[in-house]
Image 1: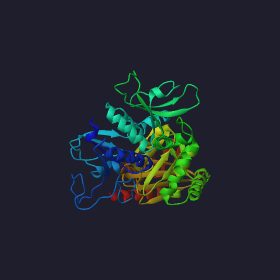
Image 2: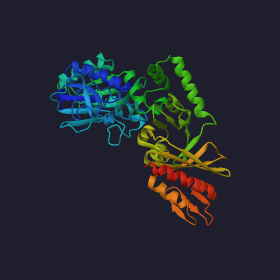
Image 3: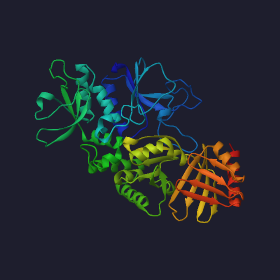
Image 4: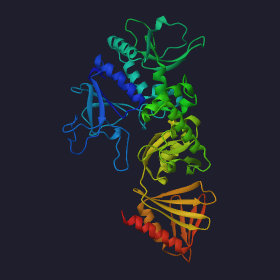
Length: 469
């Protein structure tokens, strides 16, 4: 790849992306790359293929969504040049974003959010090299050009990313990183441990299988990359060289700035989210074979995921707009991404089990119609992609089971509930009616029954919901 003809396209803003932009700005000034810009969403009034705004300035792409309009950096269809130039580019480097249509330019992906991304699925021990910031530093460190590498070292030191040294001037290290490798190394006396970046060997030196220059990465780079790749692992000392006090020192000022509040208010918000998370009155929802605290009914708690990462407590929480976040074990994240999100009326899901997080968008519920019988309730929740049958046991009011149905399956269910001696088998539910029309809902967690009047009410509710489609 010819870096001097590479244009970097940046996704949504966050602390790591801010550091990446800080580095690329100086790299552009020093002519290491052609330039960089922001991924944008152009409105339909603008040219569909223009690489720059033509009628009015689109805003920088962010991950702030609403129920009416959702977009993110992976749906960009244009960009705005921030520094340098995109003219004559040979390579488009997408950093946590994607662009359509596909321009006739080679594309290199820097990301760790989706399957296939270079940093996807990497464990906490590889958090720093797997992060997007780490991937970019490794790309630059691998360039086989002495002048380029020398300028790269100068840029690193100018932006405060670390200090660069010739290997020969450093004694006592057990093993240096390879070229373009980020490695955690402890010295021979085990008195110091640091993350090091190996930069391309000087052609005038002889270092077999090692770099000629190492960069001792700064605490800011290490902590920011660690928190972005796996916040829970960073808080719980699973990432080499990173400890909880280091994360708090970075995160509290960041959270305060993001919410435009003072540090004490951040701590108040953290304590409130912690109170809700550990409250016995907070409901739980079943994901896979486990119960997860469901904080969605508490509204937007800005520090809920922070508390979940700190404590290791699994939870499902609301973000801004209709965004939803899951902080959980790798097994639960995997189950959520594969199937369980449908039962929860969550769509457009993404996440990485190795990073212990997932996210998605909550479908808007139009109606909630309950049919009660004895100690049990059966509910119907309508979403844009179908219906969910909600099974709630009044003896365990903080637990519920959700069975996701397509509109076609729901329509069949409505018909069955109006018949006698009928049966419908769904993936997670069997529904049977007897000779009187009473209905039984058979789930692996138990059996729910409705008399014929309430079964007919539920059927009418299903008919009403499916008729709108």
